[in-house]
View 1 (cartoon, rainbow, N blue to C red):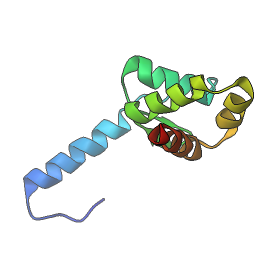
View 2: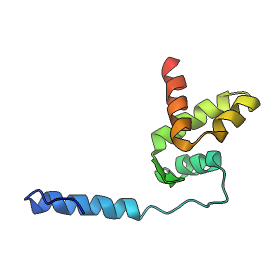
View 3: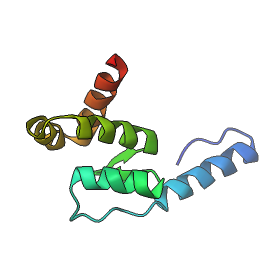
View 4: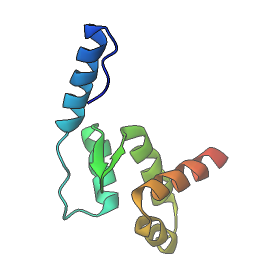
Length: 96
């Protein structure tokens, strides 16, 4: 638990945020990473993928880049760990 700040309002807000993050439903483990990203965008709800918290904006940009790639490059992107996949997609999107 974090150190108290001296203000009960700040501590209550922090606890509410922690409770909200813990209440996020876990995605189906049978889905691929790309399908989990599609689920995040479809439900408009951030979620964890392999322990990495992915927000809707990052998921949307990653899917846009993924869908614009050739099949061979889509497979390469999908094989990356989630953090790397999002970082590469954000880098590619920032160039255009």
